[in-house]
Image (spheres, rainbow, N blue to C red):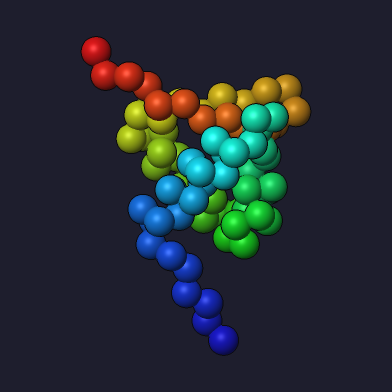
Length: 72
């Protein structure tokens, strides 16, 4: 059976919330697992967040953190 996922805005909000609640960051795989989204969908959502002005920081262990870039 085909699974319906939330719309992109809802998914992006869920990703931001999850990363904000994770002080040590999360990998893309962890985000996908915790939110029960396909990894490819998470990758696309993260790219869209970057395009919207969110800064994704990745450490040497591939853990992500997110920041909003303040407008000048």
